Length: 56
Image 1 (cartoon, rainbow, N blue to C red):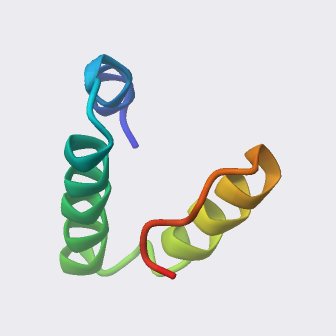
Image 2: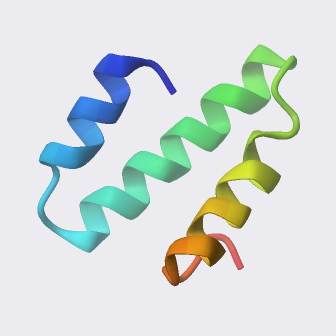
């Protein structure tokens, strides 16, 4: 994620908006092709913080 994307994510208040944002990021990373490990890294980060991973 870029700094702008992180800032935007933090500004979102509703969980549904955050889930949609993460889904958009996942599609963006898939289209770029180079970042296949992003989903795994994000899942680990969610587990570490005790947050439910939106794509379980």
